[in-house]
Image (cartoon, rainbow, N blue to C red; front, side, top):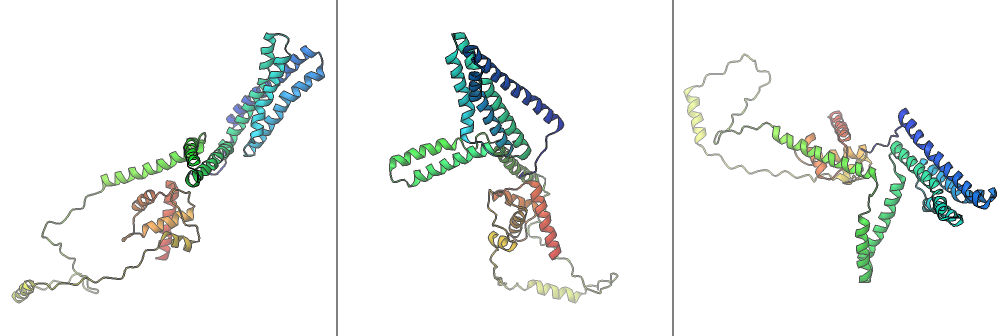
Length: 351
């Protein structure tokens, strides 16, 4: 589930994405050319028109290239860049609407610079999706979630410890509003949660099927004690004949049966305290595994070893996996099976 390998774009995907990027660049350039033509028709000076285009579409293009570059590097974009992508075209639109000679031309002049804004946002979104597809990391979503979690932590602390009751109530309300925004837009978080629930459902279904298809154990009839297996004598001949039972032997056996058995005092053996999970992790040289957190391969082996020997006799694989899920530990089915195989191999080598 925690696969960090990068995926490469196929030839068809690269072709389609390139074809989608060409119209964005083309229409952004047409918007800049339209603004230049509009301003030239009013002032009849190319220098003035170039200045307006540079301040509007040109600056927007610079911010768009910055946004795309940071996104391709897997970094989030500063707030100033995102605000500038919409502020500069808006200023250019207001300028065009102000200098237009008529009302109709004012509407046309106002809409022309928005082509560069849409092209810049489209290129930034496309670059972001490519990075998320290849690396599995959404830097923009992580930035938003980090900001939300920081504010949520502050308001939770303020709601719990602030000396003024009004401030505590205010932070309590704000913390609940911020809780709705946690994980919003983070597709990877949703995919991970679905994966965790899928593993829990698989473990539950496995336990249910094991209970349905388990063979019943036939219990002996009441009052009937199963006969013990005859002892095997080393060196005895397989063809040896059992000596016949005489009448004297029968009488001795009857006398033995009439003697009531003496009460047997149970012997209490000293109980060895169980080894904790932290002690096993310390011996293995890994951090103590925590429930709900991603575990390394070594930590998976430590958890399975602890669960296997938490009872006597040791748990089977199915029982250990059930205890693993009930304990809230996170791990894919394939990784758990691999860790169990490593644990079994280590036990065989020790034996």
